[in-house]
Image (cartoon, rainbow, N blue to C red):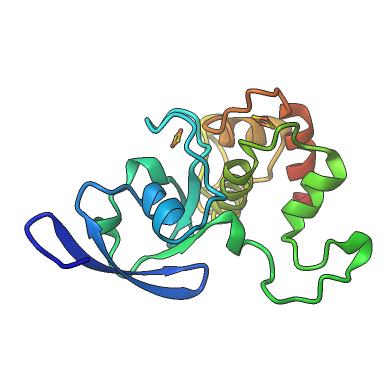
Length: 185
Ligand code: FES
Ligand code: FES
């Protein structure tokens, strides 16, 4: 695809791999990941920033990829659910789940999904939420007297609040919270 008034070249690092693309200026990051890079883990639930199914990590911070224009992310480091686990690791781990991210293992162990449509977004969002809490970023339910910048302990209320942007139409919320608890205890 040639660059013109409506298309520009952009370089992204996706799951550790550099990707040089020419994209339509209107293309969302979600559509580029799914339709140009064949990374279909991030899902298009609402395409309006309301469900969280499209959540990915952009430079380590979670974001709704349906709300981001790919062309505006030159040089960014994108991680999708496909990139969470240890790529290439021997998959012969306990239960045949070697290579999965600890949160992915916990989701399996806790049966934290039914249809699985929201799961990639839940996983990326939880990875981001855990990092935010470790970095001391408060949520709406964090004790206002907590020391700024000190890691925030992820209580059930904290997990619920921090993952409240990720909807699950199957209602797997209790098991999702348990899975996140398992990796943060
Ligand atoms: Fe992006 Fe729903 S598809 S928030
Ligand atoms: Fe079905 Fe969450 S597991 S939408």
